[in-house]
Length: 86
Image (cartoon, rainbow, N blue to C red; front, side, top):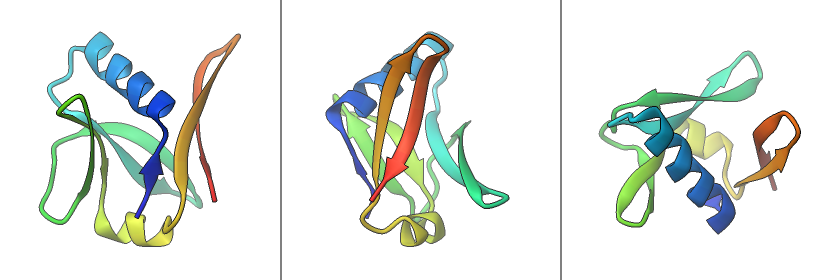
């Protein structure tokens, strides 16, 4: 299971609100790394909620490869950067 820090959940919620998207962000695998993209919830997803609203979706195959990982973020001069740690 993938964990999300409170700070990252808050920023995910902010990104979702700023984009006015009705969708949550999804972690997708891409050429040996991971990216975030807006998507709809699918059957079997791990769903991370913040304040009762889905903010992060993780497909079961991706969640399996990220077992015990934590999503966090940092704000810097170039904006917000999300990262995974174990």
